[in-house]
Image 1 (cartoon, rainbow, N blue to C red):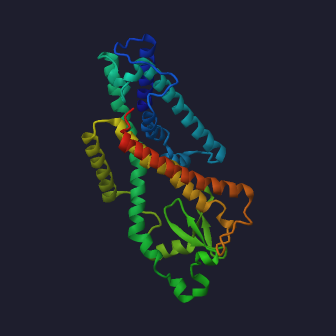
Image 2 (image 1 turned 120 degrees about the vertical axis):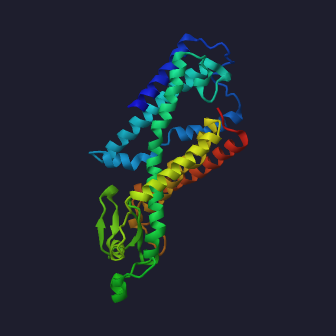
Image 3 (image 1 turned 30 degrees about the vertical axis):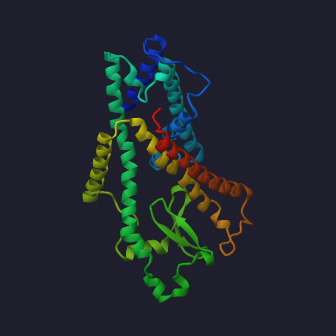
Length: 332
């Protein structure tokens, strides 16, 4: 609530200065004509970053009482819609106040006063209290990756005890035999066929191969490693230290946002969701021996194709944004 209050104050500050029209060093204002073609591409990565909230989606869904698709879409629509309104108000009124002389950080251009000083403090509070929203999913992801490479990947290569006793009954099916790769929100990957036993995981209707979990249990390894103790402290400390080093070595916030938007935001928003969707949507209808989609419903075929288009679009956006950031110097 403190962070959101800082956002409200900044929006009001920019809007009030626009109404007062008290900026002395005001540049020319172009309503329809862009400042330059390069400026459009240089600003694009920041737009991509501005609407990237997907890394917190799993945490939000887990906290919803009603986890239906309509409820989730309402949350997404309300969040993105509110952000869009605030961005448009600040972006338009801020530009109209300064014209082409607008700075990447609009607060810097206002004359020194109590209101502008409070605005600078509000930005500090906003960034500081928004940091956990980025650190929490990053820390959890690093923990899952470390757990996978340390245990799960090693165990998945070993034959289970049951498979040594009865290869025909317990052997993991290959993709050629019709086995589907099942991705679990719990962080493990396994293979499953229509004849293998599986337990429903509950989240998003996915299932986890019970044989695979049994192998982990036989080895005394949990399917997902809890984040606590020394690992919690070490991962958190490393993230904090690296973030601090970047913060004190980079002068332009716009450049940081541009690089993050070019790489991380395009991956989280476009590329990875598209890849996951293409692999998982309608996978139960695919004949893995031929790769045919013949029995797949048209709606799922369309969604599967659109997922591939989304990934291709993400790669294109990443290429354009990263090139603009490096060669054009995104700073607007």
